[in-house]
Image (tube, rainbow, N blue to C red; front, top):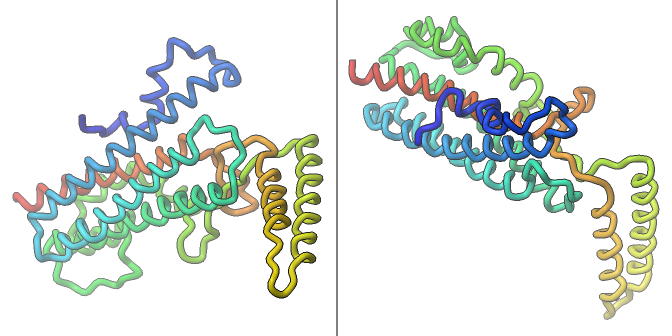
Length: 290
C-alpha cells in the first residue's frame, strides 16, 4: 500500500492507540512507543515506494541530467536513508532503556548523520534535476541552486514548483539550523545513557576500577609476554561501566541546543522529505508527458 500524506505523520499512527490514551504522558508512554515504532516502519516502507517512483519517472529523462539526478543522486541517497533507518530501529528502538555500548553509540550516531546528510543531499539532487527537466539552457551558479529559493525556481522557469515547496519551508529552515550535520555544522551524537545522582556515583567508581585494571595490565607488559588475563579483566571492567544508567533515545547537535528525541523526530523529518519529493517528482512526470 502506498504511504503518502497523513500516513507519513506520527499523529496518524498515534491515533491507532487513541482508545488507550489517558492524556497522562507518563501513563501513556507505552502507547507512544508503539506508535513511534509503527511510524518509523511506515516511513521506512515509503522510502522504497518513493525511490521506485523516482526511478520510474527518470526513464522519461534518460540520458539527461534530470535522469541522472533522480537515479544516481536522489535514488541512491534514499537507499542510504532506508538502510540507516533500518539500522537505527534495530540498534536503537523507541522502547530501548538498556545503556548502549560504545559500538552501539557509534552505530547510532553514524546512522543519524547518514540520514540527515542525505536528506540535505536529496533536496540538492531535486534542485539540480529541475533545469534539465524544464529544458533550461542558461548558465547556473552552483551556489544559487536551492529547491526553496523562489529566485532560483523563477530563474529556471520553474514557477510552478514554488507552491509545491511552500508548505515545507518552515521544516527546511528548522532542519538547516537544528539538525544539519553537513559541512561546517557539528555532527550529531548520542548519549550512551542518562545518569542520576546515584548512578553517576556508580559510574565514577566503576570507571576508577577500569582505570586501575588497565594500569595493571600495562604494567604487566614485558618483552615476549602479553598479559592476556590482565587485559581481559580491564575489558570486563570497562564493559561494566557501559551497563550503568538508563538509555533514552535522544540525540545532540549543538551543545547549547539541548537534546532532541530520536522518535518521532527522525522518521517525521524523513516523512517530510518524502512528501515534498513525491510532489516534485509528480510535477516532473507531468512535464515529461506535456
